[in-house]
Length: 375
Ligand code: SF4
Image (cartoon, protein in one colour):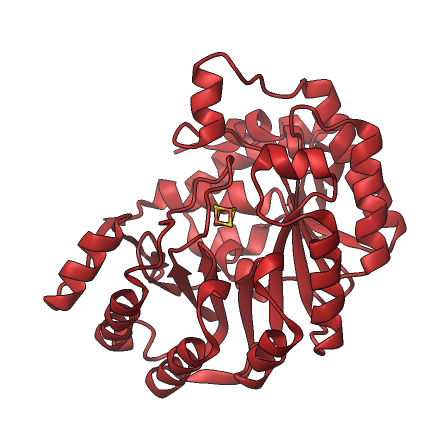
């Protein structure tokens, strides 16, 4: 199930936690879109033999693009790749960019899934994160998306934020549940060095949240969303039945994908490619007909470890049949020695040929998973 990811590298301002590649000026938007068109043409063969089941426009902020720009982009994709008629086509939007007209336009040009970055409904937390919108704008944006007929809406939230009390997190979750989106991504705040939070942390001005409180946030999240009918299908993802993100599931299922735009990653089944994280270098190289990427071939050990890392934090878990098909019996034997030890201590379960970690422990599963790496 192949997919295409397109990175639109523009944001009106930089949120303090964000590590994605972006520029805060749109001065080069037109030249970027021309370069993106060239890259689409150069990469026409990357997934040529496969039908494309998912398209995902992320960033940055794709909703800084005008409707005509998005329409041209989608037309070019359809002309170049074999898009499945029922492909999941997602676009990320920021609550303060959109109007009913804009949302209806997105539907008309073929988007059938919206992903909206909201992060919190608490004014102080929104200011701390340096988001551009307020809680009311965010709620209104969800209602507008529903009014425009989007019946597959995903919203992003962050927990594990220093200063986020249990009460405020509970209130945020209650408001979120009332809005009834089909899909919720909830991420624990990670403080990355090259962000405003990373700089504050290195100066001793920001302390990460206490581990116990962060666990309480996670438990509250699972409990409240579970009671509201959401399935916890991956460490950071919850959905109403049948609304898993097909695009992200592709990443977890080792499907092939093509990434377009600066910093975008691609995978052809054996090798990974990543485009340069610099808009100017990206545009210059593309204009000379050069793909601005580097690549690495994954060793069997890398593929094995990645498979464990991604699958042990999903409800599906690790499939023994997949391991048998793709890795040697020596590797499997070695793995099963550790698995058996962890089964007897109750940290893993083995049912219907699937090895799993129970969802309550996904958030503290790092060391458990690295114990299983054997190559
Ligand atoms: S979180 Fe989204 S809107 Fe904020 S800087 Fe990052 S990409 Fe831009």
